[in-house]
Image 1 (tube, rainbow over the protein chains, first blue to last red):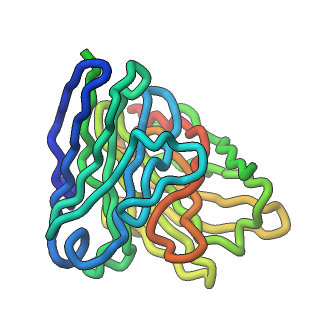
Image 2 (cartoon, each protein chain N blue to C red):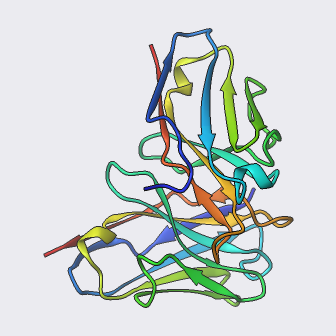
Length: 112
Length: 119
């Protein structure tokens, strides 16, 4: 059982927007501005898409955005494209473990 | 750009040992906190071990006492020594760099090394 809860799957049509949620507790998501998101295509390395809740690394499309409310963080992808189809993982700092980073269980995004 | 290249994966018998290496370039392995993350077939990402800049190490409960993370500054390489391997250790193992400011996210990843544990 993962420490952060994500929906198993979401889907959307090209051009639409989708949102993936990531729910934790006040010891992690709700207590700190340290949520990150990773995109994972099969057979490829994970790729950092967002960090510190809303920040995008250089080279990541501005179609990807992040937000947080209480103990739930969200990743929104606007203008869905076929290449966005992948697994997405959230991650957060936590004050409840020796190693301070925990992952969500992952969400499979299908572009219809 | 920063690069991480894993090696050392393969097919190993249950109970055996294997050492993964992660050669890094464009940054130094001892000036950054580094970690191993794995993904078992059909499963999500699972953190395995971390070595912080100051040398402090931690491992997940699932591998504690069996896996050891280390680094060699002269070779600019990160290692994961895996002993007493179990079927459930079968996974792709990624080395990843933690960001240098907060050490709360992984900003660069290797391409992964497949470890298959078989009886």
